[in-house]
Image (cartoon, rainbow, N blue to C red; front, side):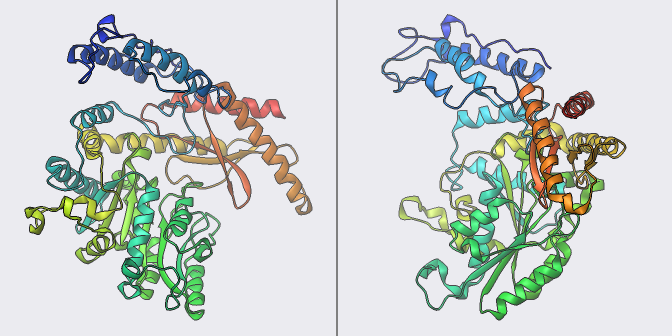
Length: 514
């Protein structure tokens, strides 16, 4: 494992009670500068050497809060004291997402240029809600989202802006789907207590992210109006069953609104057949939202551009730089296509209260990004994404993504050639789904349930022991009911050695478990 970074220990000039403190005003510039240098040194060492602690913290619930005061301090504390608490109280409770061996969920790397972008964004404190409250922030966001669209190979005509997460993006897409049927008058009349409004239905695969369900709850469709379409043998939505579900709902008098297709599902990273789904959506006038939160960035790699086949016909689409593009949480890019679709987004969310209006509001050349979502206050997220895209460049990003996918492909080849372990899904990107098999796991069909219990017990034990070692952090899922381990290679600093050593650890634990 990487060696320990030293603790940030600012010099006494960083300020303490009675030192550089004033009853009014901010931290003095000299104290800020001294502390800042020390903290940047700590960050640089942390990024270079990695954490000196288990990747998954080995603490009990409540252990951190028990060391924190019940109430905020009345008297000022020095930066030295705060950084001491950071190291001694908080640091032991960190899950080290920024470790090369964080291979659970989808890793989120905070790269150097992105961290510097976050620092600059915090210092200039832009609120990018109206053009006039953040002209540079607004215009940079629009231009950077244009760059990103071109890097992904999406056609002109897509409007892009940044939201916090894909969960919000999916909710925005389905809200726009609802508004695209203006005859429902939900913006003005709402949906509650109306005898003239049929149940509104939306559709996604059984492998779709849980945010689709949350959006159905939040928007008032209700969980029962979300149709989870079964998948094929490699976990892709089946268009024939989608068509059948829509036809059935229409016959019942329901009102289908939209479909969520996925490019890179959370569990297996499967890719739904978007072209066929788009045909069905156009036939029934349904909004098509594509969740490419994880897999979408792979389209930066020219030979992977085909993952977006059919996505040029989507009404809305989300890709998350904070999942696999070395940009810290949170940063999701949300696109809508064609002027008329963009106007639907504005129709769904645009409001201009008097306290925000100005003489510039009639200028059609201005874009107020608050009009495209539920947030009024908007962070200057575009700055860190601009730093990442500019510093690494499209070729540099493609090379890093290609390397991750090669590591995953090589591991899959190893698994396929090794007895006692099986690959559970195709490796479409850089996520490998697999499980170890106990002896005699290929018994009779009548023993299937008992076998699955044995397999789950074996693999959950392997994962828990690996995580407890502190050398790696893995997560699991279930694919059509089968307990499955996931190893995700997405960290900027992950190496071939990291993958090899993690795999050796897992196979050793599997051998020990028998």
